[in-house]
Image (cartoon, rainbow, N blue to C red):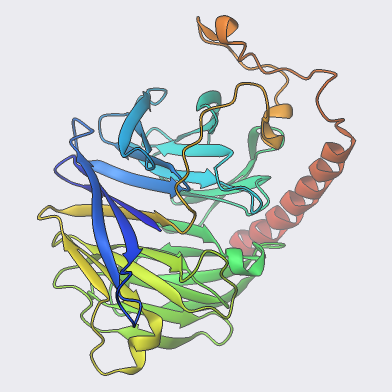
Length: 390
């Protein structure tokens, strides 16, 4: 299990969560992997999947890291504004991501092939900066929220924005809930968390926090964890809308990042989960949810970076070294773009992606397009009627 954190001081921190071999109780420890002054300006977002990690900063750059070798291996410079959000798409059957989506402060969203990090397409999602992005577990669509107080749906099959509507208020976070198969998503607006059905965007419930929510992460069995200016880690039961448990005063300052890690590599919904949190006080703490029954639970492990942390990401997948494979196993999304504008050296590498006879037939793709279109229509009809009524 790996954790990566970004800081205001432009440093990125990597940690490995290990179980002590000689400990009878299976104690965990955070072992530092690396710390790099990777960016020229503060880091705004990080993402991790398997051995791949990325960070985005105010210098308009995305840095790429290999956690297995603890090294920085490259950068992406397609954005012309601050990189505000990053999200990997990793199929359940793979231990390495297939695609990377990045959002920036100019309202654009860029799509990359994560093996070997080739830029595929840039979409204009918002009129102002994008605050967050979330990819559906199927990898066929994504949701974004921006500073224009709007929500956008991106059709990743056709590579274009398929829906755009006003929320009436700026949202800072949007996430699909993977434990429900992506059937639900939630949107965070200041101290309020709104849970919606993915099929028709119907509002299921509203969760009200006492103070502003700065980070959120879906857990197992319909649990949603939030943290923010109240310095607490709160777990909400999305089935009842009530607080399942809470870790009071988890940090001495506001909580800036939450990550849910499985307790084992072959985790199921009944397995205990490990929760990692990062704060602007520079500390990263690891918690076991089974200890929340105590009055004042203690963290399993803790690390102090002595910097102002801004974001946190993690992965339970093993960090195995993997060399990029050119034109051997391109993801589904790549086959749906008929032509990608190549770079000057792409012809030498053979990374001009087009539909070719040796690739899988596109009959199945047409069915997926119909599903996405139907989802977009129902989604738009519901939200359109809702906001017209207001």
